[in-house]
Length: 276
Image (cartoon, rainbow, N blue to C red; front, side, top):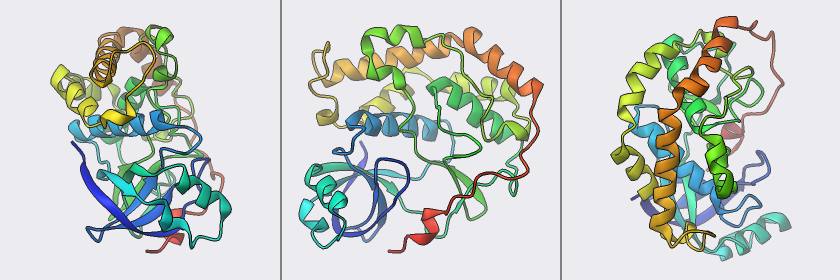
């Protein structure tokens, strides 16, 4: 289970994307980037964050700690933005927090090359979970103490938005043409050899078990939260077993290569502008 904290102060909104996460202080004196269950994307985004993030952690990939955060909507009353107040009113109780990495920089592939081994592991993992949101323009990686960290996995596991068609995603090709680490000559074969044996039923089950019951309740077509967890385990296990269907395409994209961009679209690093 994830560690649980209680929010004590709403610090500032982080205006990245459409979910409007907020930087919050908690009763353990830590600061967390909180994503709210009342945001427009709903709870499935938080489920994807947990399962993908905890599975990445089990594989040795660097992910900031995830916690569940109890939020009292009254914490947002002093926030002048009406949108923020409404979001907190829709999100009482348990939400998801990502450990705040103070001073972290947005990952820039032009300034930092993590090397073929790391690039291969991240690309292989993104292909497994169907991550459509780690591109040149939106890396969803941070550089902290000279080390890369993976963040924002809400756009993974998209099959769970239509469980009745989830089987179609098992062998679905992965489009790696715009992946942020493509210019680092990812070593996919080494990644496959190292990571595939680690994705056991126990590892998948542990990642799914970290999701709170109330975020899995009332899922149409399932008897209860444990049945939904079992479906995630089965789906990801089947995806792993079907690597012959999607890994060759990713390998071909890596072999074809692409020129590293001269620049990428400027984007202010909100991790720097936000202050506890």
